[in-house]
Length: 108
Length: 113
Image (tube, rainbow over all chains, first blue to last red; front, side, top):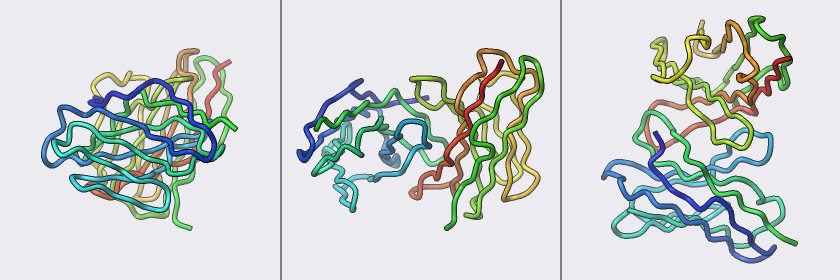
C-alpha cells in the first residue's frame, strides 16, 4: 500500500516554479521515488524518478534529501497545462501503489 | 509509437450484465496491471500478470477477473457489475523491475446503468 504523504492541493502562478513536496519516511535503500501526473480523465504520465541523487529532465527536477525521507518535484516554469494531480510513489520494483497525490492548479 | 491502448474509451453496461474491457501493448513488456480509479480518488491496483502468472491484490472483489492470452493483450472481466463498479479502469505495463517504471493507457470509463 501507499507509503507516501503529500499535500492535498497547491496553487502556483503561471510562469513561476511549482515545488511539490513528498514525504516517504519509511523508504528503504533499494526503493526508488517516482513522480507521475494525471491530467483530468487521462492515464497517469511519467515525469521523473530517482534513487539517491537529484535528477533533472526536460519536464522537471527531482530533489531528494540526503536521508531520502522526503523529496520535492520542481516544475521550473509552470504553465496552465501543468494543472493536474501529481503522485509521488515509493517503488519497490514490483507494484505501484498510489497515494492521494497533490492537485496542482496553475493560475493565470 | 509503442504504447498501451485501451478499448473502448467509454463503456456503458447494465447492472449485472457481464462486461469486458481490453488492453493491448506494443512495448513487449512482461507485466500488465489493472487499476480501478473512482471519481476524485487515486488509482487502486486490482491485479497484475507477470508473464502468465496472475497476482491478485488481497482486497480485489471476486467479481473482477482477468485474462492474458498472450504478451500483447490483457482483459478485465467484471462478472456482475454493480453501481459501485462505475469507475475509470486503467491498464499499465512494465518490464517488471526498476527503474523503468510503468506506462499507462488512457483508460476506459465504465458507467453502470
